[in-house]
Amino acid sequence: MANDDSDEDARAHLARGNPIYVSTPDTPKGLVEKRFPDGRRQFVRFDLQGEHVVVDDVQTVSDSPLEP
Image 1 (cartoon, rainbow, N blue to C red):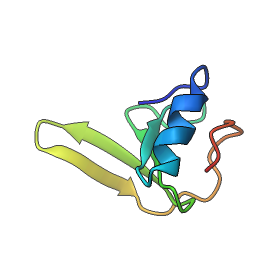
Image 2 (cartoon, rainbow, N blue to C red):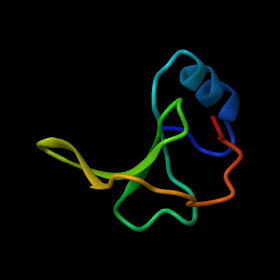
Image 3 (cartoon, rainbow, N blue to C red):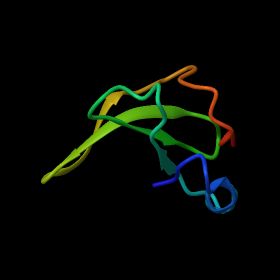
Image 4 (tube, helix red, strand yellow):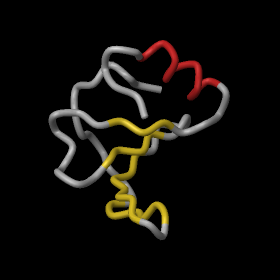
């Protein structure tokens, strides 16, 4: 999971074609934002059964610098 303090690693991960997980002050409580290399975003939550998509198409969530 990335945070706004270490976006170099997150950008490299996206460049390799992998999604990243980000939590910003605008992220709803209990959820994590999943960002894909193609710019798509989802809100997901995790539990013992794994990852669950809560919102499939997040348009604009925050002003975080981790843009793909």
